[in-house]
Length: 145
Image (tube, rainbow, N blue to C red; front, side, top):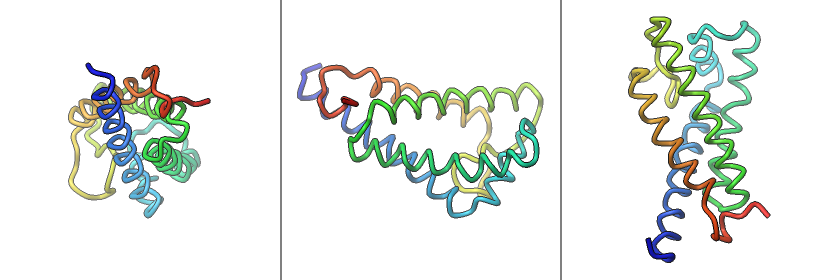
């Protein structure tokens, strides 16, 4: 790929992924109680931890999204997004293995239910984009220095 084309593709990936995470975080921030119920549905954490996760994770998602969109500390933001997506994939797989039929809690709480398989495929795509951004070399805009 030509360097100029590569630069634009990486910028589109960065802004697109950032937009998704800023949007997802903002939706959860607006209704932390509903998101806490989504977290509790996974049946992994003790009761008080569901609220702790529900009150912090959306802010991390929104901040990483904002950093990706602005191009500031993109490598760090992409690394955190990649780590979150790996965790999301593992958690979703655990619901399938345990036979839980829950909404993933990824976006709007209490809306249409997203299957775990659909959410896993979407998270694999997001993980791939985040890793592409994280591993970008030679792009000053992607430097964390």
